Structures are given as structure tokens and as C-alpha cells.
Length: 246
Length: 230
Ligand code: HEM
Ligand code: SF4
Ligand code: FES
Image (cartoon, rainbow over all chains, first blue to last red; front, side):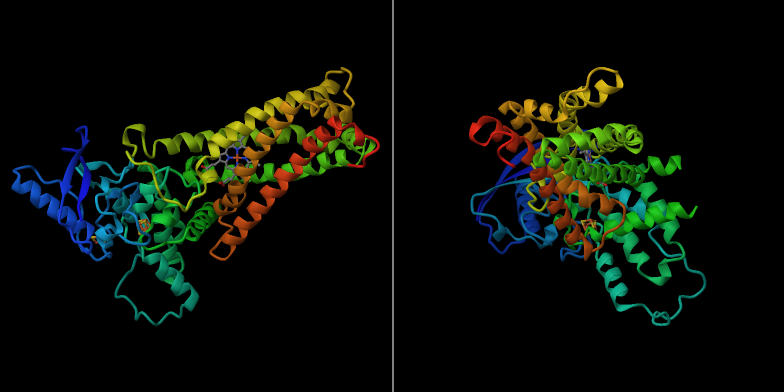
């Protein structure tokens, strides 16, 4: 297959970026999208040009490091996958593929296609944890309803990729925060700090420049782990009840 | 409290409560309108009741307040949301995700359309009825006012455009408000979305029925106002 690839190039956070257009040929349909970018970068190196930077790590859909807004969709033209799970067979031979970084006020571009998602870490540091003292008790000592365990597990599937923010018209982080709050709120171990957690994480989210939730559902549609917006209802509930408590 | 009202969820709580208040108001308003299809005397009697009842008099400023709060907070929320992805950070390729409804992404524009037509509506009816009576001027016969207003096809079309904007606004707003209040989960989400559609359809067709019936009655003499029970 051959493609025309338009890549966002930006020297650093302050520089003004622009698209550069490249061509790649002889790509097998079974090549992963990121491998295609590797081949393209290799080509640029051989031509004496600077390769473009993009984020990736596990390349098996579990770390949340890969990003990229491809032809108008975070993680490209397929549902419930990360960019590293996307293959070239999802495109047509001769296609023009436009690759942009995540764009959100809270995710500034570092270089080319790499954005800084440290804002997510800050939200987690604000309350996305359970405090323990002493040694951790045996995991099975506290009985947990299967239904609650399942819901907590579903919410825990969030890999912190930021696709929800990237696709939301408000650049809102509500799905990410909801997934983290929900995962802990559904477990007895998470209850003692639940009210404090909801308030602290929402306050941090607002402070860092993410928008509010308009319930468009765009996040759920693009989330590689298909985290449901029902978790956002739970976050709202947790937050409102937490504010009623004091 | 101030902290809470400045938070993104706090602001949306105010929007959802004021929005649901307006949702209930729309149903009451619809019920009153439909009496105009029954008979002139029924409609005029209802209007007279609305003018005299003390509870209704109290509710008028409360309703206005509901609108003002909803609009004010919609601006707070919307303007903050615009900064989530500033102008110089827009994507070159428009978002191609199919799963979201058009209404949910255009609530503010829809709201602005609703408010503009609302002024026209207040001018058409309220200024000649309740406002006139407050000012001590002579009040129009409510029924005849409806007949006269909807004898113009352009006015009818404008009203139907207005009802369409309301349709889209509430088809999302209705379930979105429950979501904001935390009164939803994976089981209730699809049910609330269904109820929102149902509510929006009832409101749209209910309101549309009045101008359409009055216009048709007016232009075909064979079923004049008194002979046809429409
Ligand atoms: C007939 C009148 C109206 C009704 C019944 C109504 C109802 C609602 C409801 C129930 C919501 C959902 C709140 C939530 O998501 O929690 C909503 C949202 C909204 N309304 Fe209204 N509304 C009306 C008029 C207006 C007007 C005049 C504006 C003025 C600009 C407006 C602007 C908005 C906006 C921007 C939102 C979305 C906020 C967001 O989620 O980001 N609405 N409305
Ligand atoms: S909620 Fe989904 S889209 Fe958002 S960060 Fe988590 S995995 Fe990514
Ligand atoms: S590189 Fe780890 S999820 Fe894509």
C-alpha cells in the first residue's frame, strides 16, 4: 500500500507548528500504524531529515502512551482500540492520512505529535489512591459484591490515554476522572476517602484547564476501553453528596 | 458554597435544576395551549384564571428567574468550555466520531435561538395580555389574539422553527440533567434517553398543533372556527 501522510511538526511547546507532507510506499496491509510511522521516520533519517516525535511504549494497548488524532478521530478509524492496535488495512490504498497531536489546553504540545499529559498525573495525585497504613490485609478478607467488583474492574480498565479529552468539544477530563473515582468508590477499601477524593480530583481537574461535561458521549465513543458515561453519573453523585456532607 | 458553585459540576447542577424547572413549565404551558383547540370559552376561562390566581402571579417572576439563572449559568459553563480547546489549538480535520448527537454539541446555539424567539413570543402574547392588564390597559381577548397571530403563515413557520429548536434542546437536555444530578446508571441511561426523546416529541407536536390548526381553520372557510370542533 502507499499513503500520503500529513504530520504535524512543531519544534517545541512555544514554536508555531505546521503540517509536513510525506509519502510512503510498499507498506503491507498488516503493518501496524505505528510501524508504518517507524518506516516513514527511517526514510526521513536516510534522507538526512529529522524524524518526527510521537509517543508509544507497550504497543499492545495496555499502557496508554500512544496517542494521535488520525483523520479526525483519536486512535484512528476503528472503535475500542489504541493507536498501537490500529493496522494499515483500515485505510484504503493511496489514502491521505492526517496525523495531529491531542489538542487540549491542558495537554500542551511538547514536540511534533508528543503532548504533555502530566495533568492526568496531577489529578491522580490529588486523590486517585487509597491510603494504607501498616501491611496490606489479605485481599479476600473483605467480601465484595460480584456486581460491585465487576463495575470497579470495568472502570479500572482506563489506561489514562487522554482520548476522552482529545475528542471532547470542551476538552473535558470527566470520563478519566469518573473512571478513577468509580473504580475506588465501588470498593469498600475506597469508601473512607471517597468524599475527599471526589472533591479533590474535581477541583484539580477544574484548576488544570479541562472543560466541564456537556454529556455529549464523545468520550465513551472514542475510549479504547469503552469506559461508560454511566461512571460520569456516579462521579457527579459522589461529588454532590460529598458537598452535602460538609 | 462559593467553591462549590465555581466548580464545573456545581455550575452544571444549577443548569440541570433550572433546566428541569423549565422542562416542567413547558408541559404546563402545553396543557394550557391545547385548551385553545377545545373551544374559545375554555381557553379564555383558562387565561382569566391564570391572570387572577395569586399562585400564578407569584410564579411569573420565579419563572423569569428560572430562565435568567439557566441562561446566566449556561454562559459561565459555555465560555469556560471554549477555553478547553482554544481557537489556536483547533484540529485541522473536523471530528469524525459518529456516536454523539448533534443537539448535545449545540446546546448553546439552540438556547440562543430559543431565547430570541421567546422575545418575539412575549411580544405577540404576553405584552398584550398579562403586561397590558398590569399596566391597566385593555387586555386583548386571548382566543382572538391566537386566531389573529396564527392567521399569518410566516408567524406559524417561525413558531415551528422555534419549537424545533426546543425539540433538539430538550431531547438532549432532559436526560443530560439527570446525568448531571447523578440520577443515572447503565440501566437508567438508555431509559432516560428514551424518555427525553418522548418528552421532546410530545412537546414539539403538542405546541405545533396549535398554530397549524388555527392557520388551517383560518384559511379554509368550510370548517370555520365555530362549525368545526378542531
Ligand atoms: C424552554 C426553555 C429551556 C429548557 C426547557 C431548557 C432545558 C435544559 C436542560 C434540562 C438542560 C440540561 C442541563 C444539564 O446538562 O445538566 C439544558 C442545558 C443547556 N441549556 Fe437549556 N433550557 C432552556 C432554555 C435555554 C436557553 C434560553 C439557553 C440560553 C442560552 C439555554 C442554554 C443551555 C445550555 C448551553 C445547556 C448545556 C450546558 C452544558 O451541558 O454544557 N437553555 N437546558
Ligand atoms: S477514560 Fe478511556 S479515553 Fe479516557 S483516559 Fe481512560 S482509557 Fe483513555
Ligand atoms: S503504546 Fe501502550 S497502549 Fe499504545
